[in-house]
Image (cartoon, rainbow, N blue to C red; front, side, top):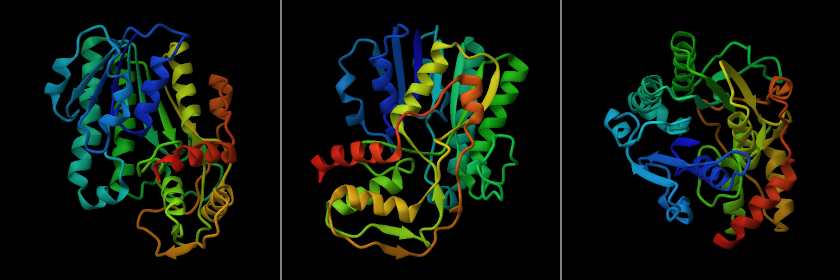
Length: 315
């Protein structure tokens, strides 16, 4: 099978690359990575640069010319490339529109013209905004609170139109909070990575707001397993799935858990709430279980221990 992985040098992308390279359930013939390295890092994919199945293209998906570097015959596109920083989306919504919306359109157009079999579009739980009923089901109305969330809704909309109109097979994954062993600060792994980084440096973790806001944290390897399942099953049609654990944890509880795992004595510091920050978020994953037979395997404490142990060698 031949893959295009946009944003493949980032946190989630590099884990998916590692997973695909070692995948045995289906043959991987070729993997193209397109990344402009604005947030991704070449170090993330260095271990596999010598693999003749991997081709790295430094480029921006908002520029159509980048797709001319690809050979025909792609089977699967995993489209991660995006500006995911919520604060940046408030500062420069035009840039977010160009990269997240126009870039997604470029990917879909390429897939349509080249008859790509499957497009996997990781969206975000931020599309829901603030909801009154938990856990959050896929059919709930979206109420975005940031330009970033708006761009993800737009991307989902184009995915559905391209599936309905041109027959593309597209699956949208509304990722909740993905975390894992990764030493750099990202918007995906942000709060956990920041907590661990600060604790390892011997300074207090910072919580913005009261800390009573809740989130649903899913381990990166569970996300990789899900994507592998979608490819293996040759997903057809169009659908949207929440990708979380179905278990809520408050940011206060999370910070205390990380401190306990570290064995260090540090206090928690509180800062002002951030704009666009929702209060409560937890996924209803019953659709994921029923339609795909998938359930996350890593509990939060185990994932945090893996992440903490990995990051200790960096600080």
